[in-house]
Image 1 (cartoon, rainbow, N blue to C red):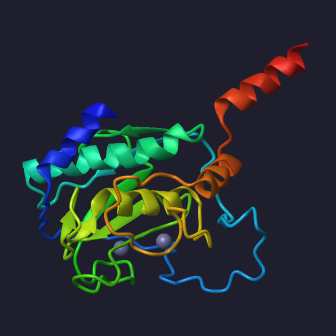
Image 2: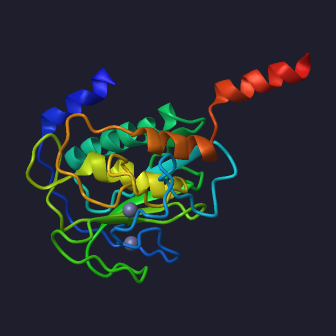
Length: 221
Ligand SMILES: [Zn+2]
Ligand SMILES: [Zn+2]
């Protein structure tokens, strides 16, 4: 964690456009959840019907038109975001370099406007990213945004990545305003972290290994 914090030093990010064709069901509905009357006090999260059938997932950042300097910062920011979810679940994430012989489970790309999946981006602000539920494995960021780290201007890349990865893993929007899965872009927040609601949601889909180990131990007796 301490090594990844150094990335904040890089600060402002600027990205160029990339063209990458995909197509499937979107996770993002871009809705804002207002009505919480039917929600229980405890469970605010919503799970999509699908989850990944295995716990180790590979991901890859497309490098079209990303400079080496940007690519370095983006990759490390994505590592931090994936690690946050891994730390709360049984999931593990492995980055595949571009050109690797394996096909990644998850591809990440920065795109502008129409980009082939019927969910065109809308220029600065508005929709900043979208992701698809399991097991599609597609995450797109709007390359027209002013993506930043460690400052209040612009859209925080780390925070957006954490939210979108939640969708990639099978989480829908939560009605808990403290949850990273609450559908609102938060201003840069030094304390940004998974809320209890996010943790309950991800562990519902991918229970902790410790819990399963205990269970196996129980069955052995
Ligand atoms: Zn969302
Ligand atoms: Zn897209």
